[in-house]
Length: 142
Image 1 (cartoon, rainbow, N blue to C red):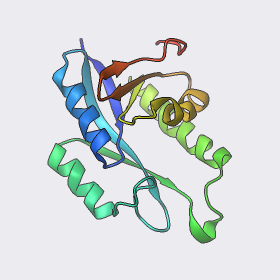
Image 2: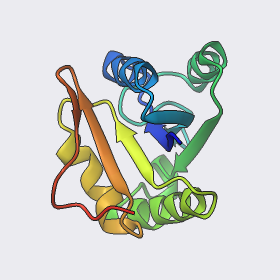
Image 3: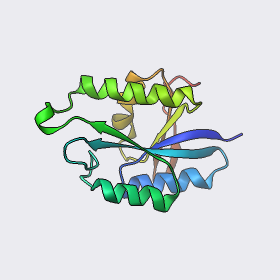
Image 4: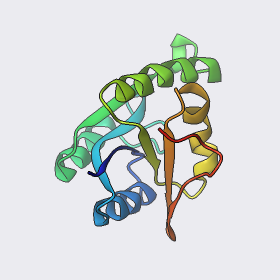
């Protein structure tokens, strides 16, 4: 049985490459995309890509998209504490439906994944780089 994975989707090339690698293997099944979006500006938090383009990407890929809206602008912005509280709820909801892995398509996976590691009930992180799959050995498994 393949492991259900949510892909942290930035809309960039590294995410697209990670998706391609995940879909090449019989080990994983990508069950959806997760993207943080600025609540005020309606753009992907990391790249500034418009929400409409994000929707079109998910539609073209045929994958469900979970938008994680982060406060911005006049609402006071998104502190690390707020971000962690929001992400904890999202990760717990995925865990409740059997998803225990979040994959990151980023050259700096350890930096991006650290928030998920700290705020979640410890899902495993599968990090993907151009060289393939890497799992931090110090992260608890299921």
